[in-house]
Image (cartoon, rainbow, N blue to C red; front, side, top):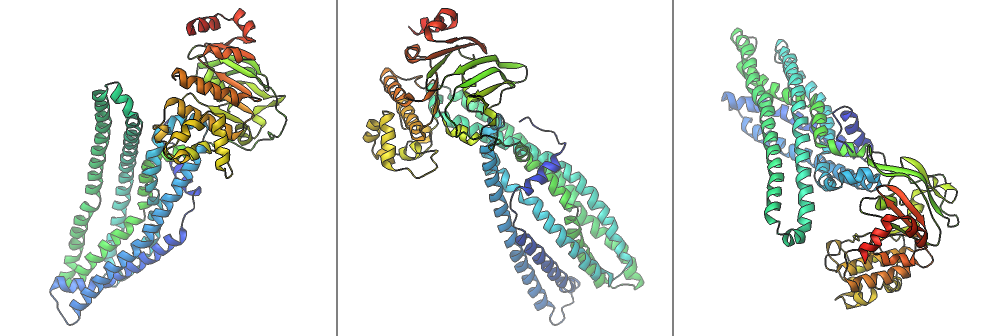
Length: 571
């Protein structure tokens, strides 16, 4: 997903709130309590004015203390629904974003995976700002009416200060909104980049130490922190500018403006000095209320900056799982017909590739690095769609078959198995949509030649394997991944360099497990080990994204120079 411009950002941000459940009763309660709080503030002003003027009549001090305490209590009470509403909206957006993430097409996910942690854990917490502003807007409308009604009892002519105040607020809001958008977008981007760097690089601490690259990593870490620091300074500067042109300046301006208008009226006897001081307090309440009206624009710009990347991600189309055909049909050959594909425009990875994967047979895909072998697997899993050509299952286009059913029929064993920081049991049973017994797990482990080492672990099936299986050897991790594939009982099996980077013992153990797993299944294998060709019913050779040869091993060896080179290199 390329970074989108500001065009359409309002629409994308607002669409976020149509996709999550919003606790409207809490916001309504927030408005009601806000109006009550304003009413208390208006009742508080006469007592405050009497104290300022030194008029200490009976009841002034008790009244002042009572309404001051009541105002504090109301502020606390009014903040309670806002607190709960904010937490609920954050939680609902995080749930939605997690759901959206796992349903994204692979292309969109791979480009944003490293930053998703920051977006989910940090940026989602800013989603409540706009909704709070809407509640403030409604509260402000009622508050302005109540305040102006009280002010009109003092002097109607002085109400002309309100339109002047409104013009200033509108101009200030527009400028503030621009600043806030720039500030938050840059801040969110810097924060996400720093989080992504730390999550990725600190996760490879073993490699950092082994490669003696501590100084290099410190340098890169400091660069990431420096970018965050600069963004932080940028945010602080814009915050200062917004503060100066906002409340700091207007408070002084209003005081001067009201007294310039009011002193002549006091001198003429139209109003008293007490009423002028009270009017000045009322106008500040009006300012706070009026500020909440155009504040929706400010909050939207603020939210646009904070939620910019989340809004872009949420605007991505999800994978379509429901298609026109079911997978509940007899196993069949899978064929590529004139398939071309590229990850980036004008950089083809596969070009006009055609071959057939026979059902119930083992097909080995060979070729040098970068020839397109793994891309074939990604197309078979339907992580991506061919740019041209078609993949067929028997006589049916694969794209017409329900996506969930298609993937459930395929097990994909990666070169680097992806394991979770949980127990052996949890990792073997991962992906099962039913309760799995220990007997089933042990049976799968036996088929994967993993039962022996599992029994030797301190807690057996309850042993916690660490992040990505860090407490296991490479061979043990791979056999655990194979046991997971056995549990799924797939009709089709994809093996991507499943014995790569292993010692001789581990490779033999994993190969034995794979041969057991392949029995009776349609299997496609990418392997650096040319000895696996002895088991192949078909060999496909790719070179630079083009099909060089396909057929039995003898047929392909006779036609493919690339295969001969690979066999010679493996001797």
